[in-house]
Length: 384
Image (cartoon, rainbow, N blue to C red; front, side, top):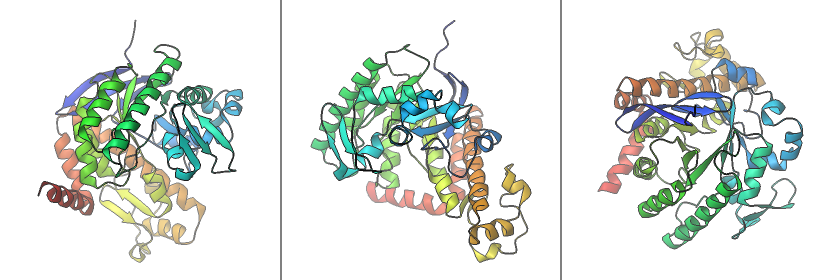
C-alpha cells in the first residue's frame, strides 16, 4: 500500500505536526536538523547524536564534492556508511555556498561556474550534476540547485534570478523523476523580499510535484521583522500535504515563530557555532559560560536538561574547561545546545498537538527578551 511522504497529523492555526517518511525511518515534525557540513557535526560523534535523539542531520554538496569527493564517498557505500551515521541525511545543494563566493563564480543558463575555495580549481554545478552528486552521497533528502539572491537585490534582478531558479528546478526534477529512487527531492522557493515574486515562485516550483518544499533566501541580512513577515506571507502558500523546510534559520525564537507560520523542518549552525564560543541555550534563557559569575557555581547548566553535560558537570567545571581552552568544552557545549534545540522542536510538536502553540512561542519570547524586543521594535518601525 502506498504511503505518502508526509502525513499531516495535527494543526493549531497555521502550525502543524506531521510525519515525514524517509528511506531510513519516519521523522516526527516539527524537527530540528543538526548541521554536519562535511559529514560530521562539529565536536560530536554519531553516538552523541544518537544519544540525544537526532533523527536526521545535514551534509553539504559543495563541501563534500570538493573534499573528499562524492565519487570516493559512493565507493564506500555512501555518506551514511562513510560517516557511520544510521539516521537520515539531508544534503543541501551547495547553492548558498557557491553563490557566496561572489567574485569566484559565474552564473549562466547551464549552471554556475565557480573556483574552489580550497585550491582555485574550476568547477561547474548544473542542476543535473548537483542531483548526481547527492545520489552518489546516497542522500535521503536532496535539494535542487537554486540561486540565493542577496538581501537588497532590486526587483528586476530578483525576477530574473527567480526565472532561472525555476528553470533549474524543472531540470532537476527531470533528472530525478518522482519515484526514481528512495531519495526525496525538495524544491526551493525564492523571490527575495517581493511578495508577488514569492507567490510566483511557490506557484511555479509546486507545479513540478517535488516531495517537499523549502523556503530559501531568508536570514541573509534583513531585519527580524522582514524575515518573519516574508515567512508568514510565504508559508501558507506552500502545498499543505508536503513537508515545509525553512533553510538556515535560526535562533530558538526564529524556530518558534517558524512553527507558528506553518513550517516543519529547521536547520542552523547556530547551536554548535555558539557552543564553541561559549554561548549556551537553556530553559532559563541564554548563558555565557565565560562569565566570572559561574566560576564557583556548583549547579548544573540547566536543571531540567537531560543531556550528559547537565547531568554530570557543574557550571563551574564547564566554565573552567572553556576558559582553559580544553577541547572537551566544545563537545559538552555542543551536546547541550543540540539537546536544547532538538527538545525545542519536540516541545513545539507537543504544543501543536495540544493546541497551545501561541503560548509556547510566547514562552520562548520570554526567555530571549532582547531578541523579542528587536523584533517588535523593527515591526513597529515598519508599520509606522
